[in-house]
Image 1 (cartoon, helix red, strand yellow):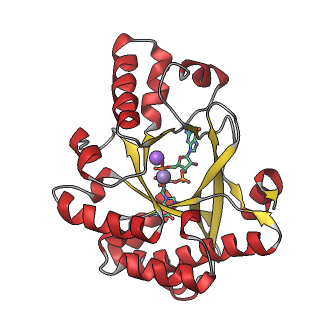
Image 2 (tube, protein in one colour):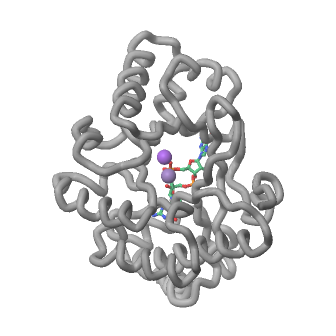
Image 3 (cartoon, rainbow, N blue to C red):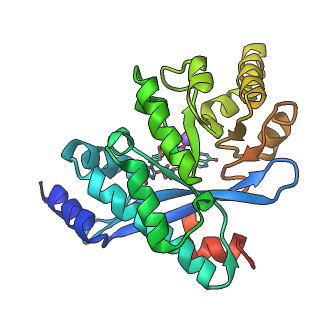
Length: 256
Ligand code: G
Ligand code: G
Ligand code: MN
Ligand code: NA
């Protein structure tokens, strides 16, 4: 309960929200193409808490809604600050919990915040997992279209881990598909089925016009093994770990 009280304070004020940014690179040119925002919570006495340890509490308590709004404002504020510092920001993808995704008026609210921060919508996108979409693909499609019509991009995250249905890819307006890192890791075992599955998913996604992202690339050997597949972007510890905003900007952002 003490934890929930502290989280409520953070949800109301934004104090203690820390965002790290992990770069995504063009697989072939190696150029940076974007970043994923990954939240941490700086607790007054417990120190830095990872999302896996507080997002579930935020979801069960309902605090995920105000917390998520604070977070989006922190990220948009950061993009604006980078721009004002003379840097050329890259598009940032924000993870959404199912409750945030289904909150009514999401796209409208995002549009208002973009205007408030005076940001081009193409700099902001949203990642959802398949658990957001279950059994409601018509309604989900409408929300995704709302975000896309603002100019934001949409990504399906951790693809292949949930109740994946390939028909999601046809029915839902996603710009990007992020292949879950378990599929990248399984390439290490060298089995024919691992290669077949990765080939089918990346081939179909690419054929449908989606930007395909390989997540969790940790070794040069994995990167090499990914070469035969239709993969556009690479994310993982090999190329860049999540880092605080200042480190991220120093390392990866170019002057305008
Ligand atoms: O950074 P880390 O590996 O600890 O992230 C663990 C999980 O927390 C990931 O699945 C990631 O998608 C999720 N996560 C990170 N940041 C956010 C966020 O801002 N909102 C939500 N809903 N989930 C997040
Ligand atoms: O569920 P989601 O894909 O949003 O989770 C993102 C999480 O994956 C982040 O917490 C990030 O720290 C983690 N991550 C990013 N790159 C790698 C990697 O190369 N290996 C592993 N094991 N985790 C990674
Ligand atoms: Mn993600
Ligand atoms: Na993921």
